[in-house]
Length: 405
Image 1 (cartoon, rainbow, N blue to C red):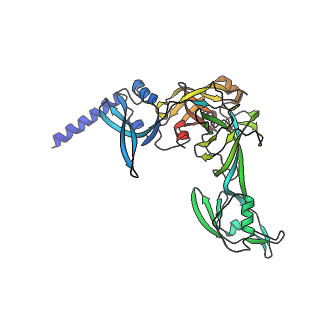
Image 2: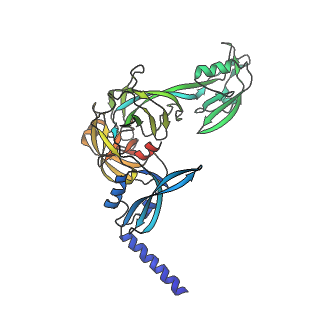
Image 3: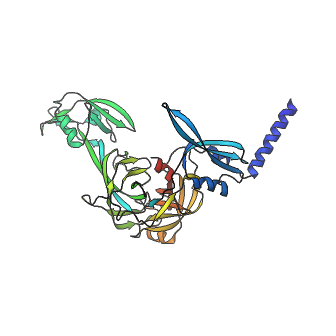
């Protein structure tokens, strides 16, 4: 028995050494998510360029599953060693081969919030003295007041109307805190100076910001931008969107990035009738909506196919930006590309290598979030963050995650 165990152990060790020598990237394969977005070109690239090792091949297969009594197609991508030893199978959505317009221009985003965001406290002068709601009630800065007495809050004026009509009776308040719904009870206080009932809270029902357009679907005019959410500048909470619009931006200046001090794009935009489209979603992976006026937003000559994370590899790439005043491509290097099992806006580490961009900005600036990342002519991601310690470096998000959001 001992002899058999020794032989099995020895063969296993030999097999592992063989795999190592075959450039078999096991960790990359097994760290892949169980679901992914790919293109047919990605499958070809993996097989021809040996992305996961020279002896690892992939193949697509379809099967039928029954969901809710209906039959649906399911597509799997299977990784095989030597073409016949199954390693891992993941469910995939195969993207159509249509091209997207490549972004790269800054846009202004004006958002109306769903509910109101609590940003601080405001003391109420009652007959018994000053009262502050946040010290006596379980409400915190960053909470989103979603409903009061079962009514959806449509804005600050609507909230004031409901509170004042309560005549000081206890109110049931539904708030959202870190994506969780909580029910609280609050008793409004009568403000002696105004004669109105109040909660004693500072709240906000709108937000605005500047970011870079990543892509516009050439068939539907749906867009994705930023690669990360727009957050409230005081509380840091992700803005829940009820409605919103996008506007053209005017670049008025650049604060160059330095070690320990990130730079920024200084842009101005005017809200009004010059809206270029809508804002419908503000997610962890970007801002989304529809471009209703393409002029000045897209360059019809600048299109690209979408590449999934499967095709991204360390090496030369480009970002598209309008920091010079016109839309241009700049050289970068993808230092690291992670095969993420969970969605994240830090999918890859990039470094700016283009001397023109370095001279102009010092690297990556605040406001460049959403700048498209191209590799081998395909749109593979967007810039999301700059390294505070080194503005020439930053993070990017795979375009997969933006499309899935």
